[in-house]
Amino acid sequence: MKFSLGPILYFWPKQQVFDFYQQAAESDVEHVYLGETVCSKRRELKLDDYLAIAHMLREAGKKVTLSTMTLLEAPAELRELGKYCDNGEFDVEANDVSAIGVLQEQGLNFTAGPGINIYNHQSLRRLIDMGMTRWVVPFELSRDWLQDVLQHNLIDTVRDCFDVEVFSFGHIPLAWSGRCFTARSENRPKDQCELCCIKYPEGREVKSQEGQQVFVLNGIQTQSGTRYNLINQLPGMNGLVDIVRISPQPEGTFDWLQRFRSNINGEHPVTLTSKENNGYWLQLAGLATG
Image (cartoon, rainbow, N blue to C red; front, side, top):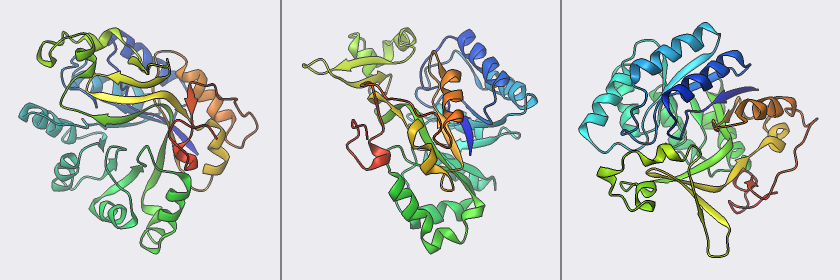
């Protein structure tokens, strides 16, 4: 079992991003994803910056994948997508079906990101035949569901053609919208947002009238209010999951990476707090902890 760092989902200052990936280079993580996947207005880093980071990480022995946007809203974003797909050096994680089309036209293999809706063996086999070599399972699906799909004869016969990756740590992206809810929370129109989401390095909390944190606002993305944490489910992933994804946090990411690695076989379980959940993986309500 290997570990990956997913793309940074929040809007961080450029130097903070560089510092984070310098730590990643010095860590024992095997895979690193780079790129803006949420909002094209977040321009602290451009493609050339990500490519420079990618070269640094590759020299440190990491496998690097460039991640594309999940929701495309303008022709300029489609052109930028083309640049990512045509980078000529690094694999690409397609987070939108349009990216799959571009990559297939070029005869390139790809990773299907968690934003691609694959819910059955027919869809999965279709993407494998199109050149998918790594599949990041949709956030809300369970271990039992994954096992059933992988055991189907359409998939079992080609199981060695692709890796299975599971989002295992971080606030779960639940939805994307044409509206920017972070801007709206500050009474700003989206077109005059002044990039206010940079003030919220781990998103902005949304609480119910009872005081329960139910969502996290992250620009046009809405995330789960509690943090998804599958650290205690790692033993059940052996033989089923190839790569465990950890979503970058402003603090503590690499400490959690070591905790996950030390608990692969269940030797060092962690007691989850009230701000964490693992429900989806266990076929429970999303907020639940099993």
